[in-house]
Length: 218
Image (cartoon, rainbow, N blue to C red; front, side):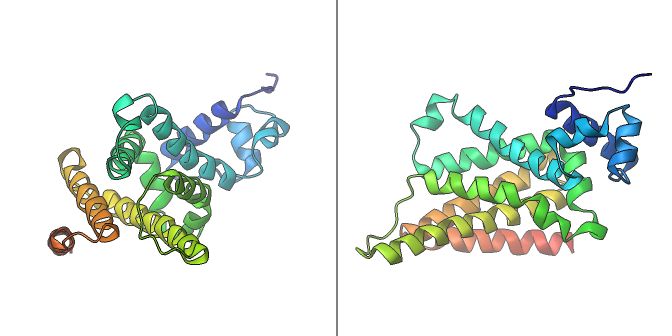
């Protein structure tokens, strides 16, 4: 049988995810992957240089799909930055949940823990760019260098927040991952309350929630 040519990027991604889910691991090599799906290796390399590039693109695509859905929602487009970030998280984790088996296999593979940083690198870049585009109010310091640093700190801390929620979600076994939804609400509200210098009660609520859940999981 002649090998397949002119295969789309999306088809290769679909095959890769299928292979991982069916074998509980990545293909041993590009050669074996292409042989499994009767695919020309040259067709594979037209789109991706490695399996790592596929994994990175998948998480980046999750974010792209999230934003595409959000921008179709008029309520999102007219919301403030706090509610926009909340909507982002809820939608993003709905998409992750639809692909939970794959995400869990990739991110909870202890043998390749260091690879997770590379896998999430493109997601990190795209997410930080998204946060930079939100109209998040900060203190007016009238110092360009300090304000630039402040903006960078916000996007970096938001990325840390996303990783924290992601780790919680991977361990969450509540119905419909409702505890992750609670964590999202408390985390986002706490971070915005700090930026807006409002009372710290939300921080206390967040701390109590995290402590309670960590104790329950241990």
